[in-house]
Length: 381
Image 1 (cartoon, rainbow, N blue to C red):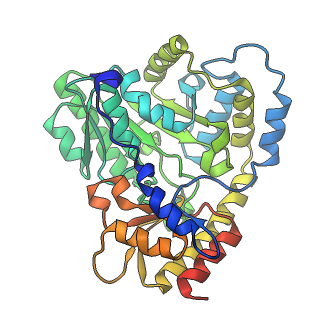
Image 2: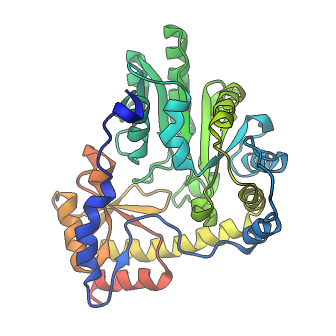
Image 3: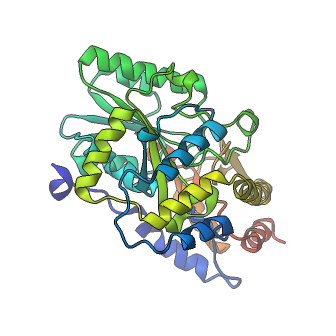
């Protein structure tokens, strides 16, 4: 099937437009908490690195500069408890969404191949499978589904978007072990790809102290990265959504295959962005400052929603609160409408799967002033 003959779902955000218009009509204006797009300044250390590399007349390296790949390796060792990565097994990407959408195609998947993704999940995992002509399957138990056969790619998302769920070492290892058992049994590779772009934004214990585990953690892999990829983006931790700065790392053979395809397709991260990415990864101070901003906003919004009769489920890490009315089930679109009357725009859980239809997703990505305004409306202040 593939892109030209497959059928893609409607772009979900288009259905939110009438609610945005209703919220925008509020006498004190719109507070947009629907999309996780950063609003704070890009750190000076990153902008300086971008400017210093602005004289960039030649083609950039598809594989990324040695400096960038070494920065990724150092970051994994320092921040993610993943020592000793091979710099050759690092590949910059044009944002992480590009790789999520294209990985099934880049791996050569197609008709008859199953792509697993979380039951409550960012919709691009589903779309990426459809683009390749493969079959997307939502699941809350990838280990059990792997035992049934036919799976060629498993997407994990930890911390999860939208619900903030964090997978522990034991959970990650169980999926990796099941995927390797399936590959051996079926005589065909099974890739486990973990989208970890919110890993630096952990709020609850034990993750706030011990860190969010990576699928590349030796406690997960047993020292063998075969079939494993971690995907990461600097959009959230460093306010670089506009730079499209991201990367994948893991199995050297898999990364090599992706690199060869991307060379042919011209899928290259611009040179100045590569320099800015390396600078961002080397500087932990700005990440701590940004985490603190989000912590304050999360605290204000959580208290306001709970005070207004809503419950916050999960949300242990990441950029969102996973919210529902505290008493009684309610369709997410009704909740979206209720909040739009207050001039507050949120995302309906229906965007993230059938099982999410009772929740709404509330982003922390608004300025302090607009967060305070949302809290005032929720509490009647």
